[in-house]
Length: 121
Image (cartoon, helix red, strand yellow):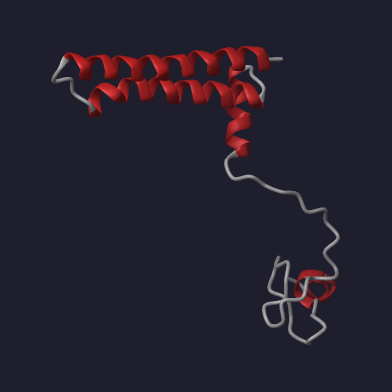
């Protein structure tokens, strides 16, 4: 990198009020913790995984709330299937309880899928 570009770059020559240089692309001083004064970019709250969720919604043709409802419905269907894996029926009463849990999971899945349909564009 030419010297003229290195001197003009605010990333390399910016110093804090305490006298230490900022680390490249840091938001705060590593010595005193003061915020960087030359950083005027608007900070946005970035939720991890939100870009993947929106890209999945674009591929499916759904809005983000509809994708969330769809994924919750899929999770409930998996929960209904997992009931039979983790619990075994030894008596009629156990079998009835397992069937009731499956019904509850499947009702939650249906409610989530209906919510996803209502939240669709």
